[in-house]
Length: 596
Ligand code: ARG
Image (cartoon, rainbow, N blue to C red; front, side, top):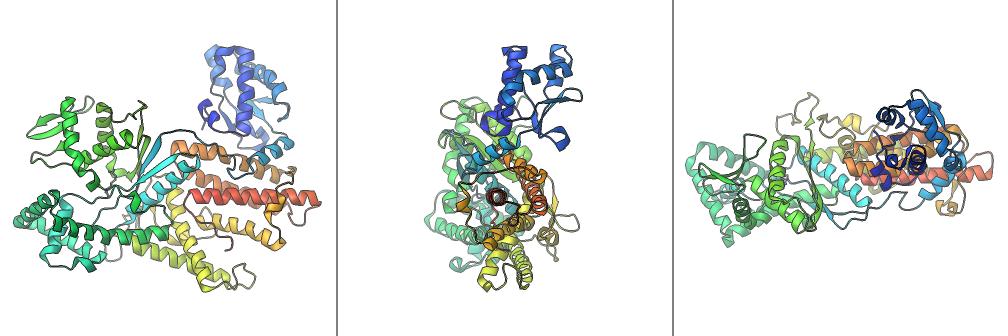
């Protein structure tokens, strides 16, 4: 992927330094109007071609009708002086690539600039907020693996955007209002269930009974509709019962979120019910703006580009899922000042979001109070499949509940960790039962989160616990293990990394160079993920980093280095790697134990 000039202003480090020099050189050699050329600077795939390549010459030469190699040489010559301090003489290769190889000293210098708490990550200074719509379970139903994905992905995106300095509002758009809720409430009340002791399983079965009855029995459906009207009119007793129902689901939800290490609490609840008194205003606004029209007694918003309109009010006066989403956008941009609203929702809701976003744009609710156009973005994700490549089900054919899945993950993680701890040489040997359990939970949860985040999100993936908890290959536990191994070097040597802060990095060996260059990529990776909202890019990077580290460790003795200053530099490299790994894992919502 090309690095655009816009991105470069967001990041610092080698790419920015090279870009600045090349932009000036282009302006000097070809004219000021070409200063902002997209330079297409990227890390080289092969050290043979230097550390970075700038690939702009082909496109620019075409535009100017000149020879790309000659153009590249001209720019390289013009940049030579400015880059001399950080790079070896530039090379022009192939049809007009410019290959750049950094000087070891420059690498060492750049490493020390990122060796601080921010790890070189550029902070955005934007007064707008970002809303992330995540989790959004439906009350009265067991949470299933689909909600797990929304929660894991949404939490990771929130952490990444917070990491670049943005204010993120996590909003849990709970399905807590409307006919399905009234139906289950009616069913529970009819069966005289004690709502004070209600359990999730009971609620789930009442939900299914109510769904069935509504199909078979008109009288039941009518009665449920009456219950809905009473609920909508805030009947005090019914509202109290409704709260009990919600609490039952939420208590279970918060237990799961705690195990999952997800930052989402009661404060983040913005369920459908929250918008209930704002729905008439939506219809009114669309009607006044002449953007909605009547269709067979219902209200719809027609679109120029397609035939099917968006239904926003039913002929019986009832509102829809989309009406609530419009009310939510209006508030998120207007009141919460969000210039980015990110919906982490199942790919099957694609059309819904396309319609809702288009309707919001028609009426101008995508604008923040200062007139900025907010980015409305649906992050669609695929399904979690069982070993038979069909949506994950239990043996008896039911949906797999979130709870059972998490229990299994924790058990598997714990058993992996205990197995290792039984070896007297293991750093975990002799730890207490409780400590091993904590590490096991971190490993099991890390395993499922990483498996969820490390693929392109829209792809369906097979839930294979055996593969996920492996300590080898592209898995969460592998990265956690890489981190823990670095920690144990310091423990073994009895060195506190703090004492290294005044020491210098010295880069010499190829494996050291590779590790250092990989570390230097981190700020750009974070900026890139914050923009594309594709967490798998961070996973791929961390895996690459762990790999670069392990070849460094294999080729470059640390505690037995030739000289004391090499030893200290290598310890610093270990320490920086450790910090980047734990920061990156934290952004994915994965804990990094110091012993494994
Ligand atoms: N509760 C919905 C479901 O489970 C998801 C809601 C997603 N968020 C939204 N703003 N529509 O399908």
